[in-house]
Image (cartoon, rainbow, N blue to C red; front, top):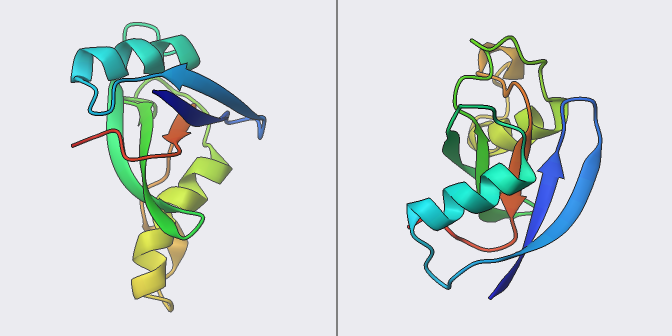
Length: 112
């Protein structure tokens, strides 16, 4: 099944791609697809459930982006924080964690 993927780089670059994924992909299939989309080195992708364009989505990020010294990813951070801020509109977003390094968001739920 062709699945859309939005890649968000820390420098603000956005790229759209399509990948072939099973309807309910195994972790090994997801990991292989994510590694083909993002430069992770020896790191593994970390799953984050997010709100994107008003719906729940699966985002994957570098598992240790902060420890690896990767730059902050403003677009991925805003998406990551959106669910919390929707429920807590007066909360200071800078008190919440941020995303460091590249991220990918799939256009359908792929993590179950």
